[in-house]
Length: 460
Ligand code: HEM
Image (tube, rainbow, N blue to C red):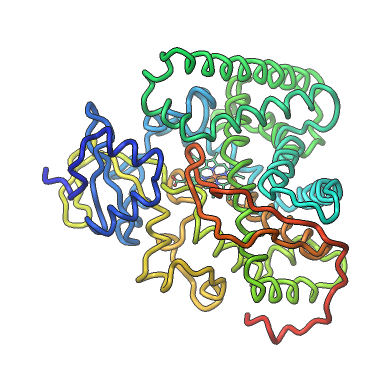
C-alpha cells in the first residue's frame, strides 16, 4: 500500500507537535502535503491518515458499517474516565444499541422542555456577577452548563450531596483538560514517573468518590422511581433496547459521565467564543441585538431557536474555532480507494474538522468571523461539521445548539455586556478538545433597554 505523504521527522517529534500545537501542526501539514496526509505518532502503531476535503469527509462519514467502521476500541483513551459501557468506547451492534437507548431524550422537540431551566440558571448565574467587575466568561459559562447538566441530565438539584458531586465533577473535568493529561493518555508510561503517578492516583481517587455518589443517586432513584420526572437519567432508566432490556447501573453511570464529559465543557467553550466574537465586532453585536429586540419581551424558546442571525452567529462560532478538531477515528474494513490512495484493512483515518472549516475554497477569508456566509449559502454536512457525522454524530447536537442560543439570547437581551480586553484570543488544545488560549474577560454594565427595532439592518 502506498501511503499518502507526511512529515519525515521521528514519531516523538510528531507526537509532541500533535499534543502541544495541534492546530498549527495540522495547518502546516495540509499546506505541505495537501488534502490527505499521514502522521506517524507512535513507533509501534501504523500511521494515522488525516483528511479534510469534503469529498473524503463524505466518504469516511457515510461509509460506516460498510467499507469502514468506527470502532470504540480506538477511543480507549477515554475509558479511564467514561468506563467500558460508554457509547464512545463501544463498537458495532453494542454501539448502535447504546445510541438507540440514549438518543430519544435528545430529540430536538423534547429538548425544548429544558428551555426554562436553562434560562433560569443563566439568570441566576449572571445575577451573581458583580456589576462593572471583570469575569472570565469561560468560568461562568462552565458554571451554567454544569448546573444545566446536573439538573437536566442527572436530575440532581440542591443539597449537600449535589454540591459535593458538582465540585468533584468540576475538578475531574478541569484536570482532564491540560495538554499534559493528553500526554499521559498517549504516553501511558509517563504515569509511572515519580510525582506524576501521585497526581494520577489523586485523580483516580476523585473519580471513585464521584462514582460512589452517582451510584448512590441511581440506587435511590430506582427505589423511588418517578416516571413523571423529565430529567435524562429518568428517561434513560425507562429506555428499553430491542429485546426489551433496560440499562444496567454500570451502563447508566458510564453514560452519565459520557454526557457530562462530552457535553459540558464543549458547550461552555462554544458559548465563550460566541461572546468573544459578538463583543469584539460591534457590527455583529448590533445586528444581533436588533434581531433579539424584534421579538419583544419573553419570546418563546422555539422562536429564539429559529432566529436566522443568531443561528448564523452560532454556526460561524463553531466554524472558525471548532471545539472538536477531529471526528472520531474510522478504520478500513475492506480495501477502499480514498483520494487516489488504495487503503488496506486496518488503516485508521480521521476527518479534520478544523482543516475543513479553514478551507479557502469553501470559506473565502477563513480567518474572518463572518456570520453572513451562513445566510448567503447553505453548506453541506461535509463542509460544515462541528458535530461530526455518520454513525458517531454528536448525540447532544440539538441540546448544545439550544443551550448556546438560549444563553446568548438571555444575556444579550437582559444586560449590557462589555469585552474588557480586545486583544486577540486564539484557540489551543484543552485535553482532547480546544479552548481559548487566554481568558476572555467580560463585564456586566447594567440592565439593557431594548433598542427600537429596525430589521432592515439584519439581512435574512
Ligand atoms: C458545542 C458543543 C459540542 C460539540 C462541538 C460536540 C462535538 C462532537 C463531535 C465532533 C463528536 C464526534 C462525532 C464524529 O466522530 O462523527 C461528538 C460526539 C458525541 N457527543 Fe458531542 N459535541 C457537543 C456537545 C455535546 C453535548 C451537549 C452532548 C450531550 C449532552 C454531547 C454528547 C456526545 C456524545 C455522547 C458523543 C459520542 C457519540 C458516539 O460515539 O456515538 N455532545 N460530539
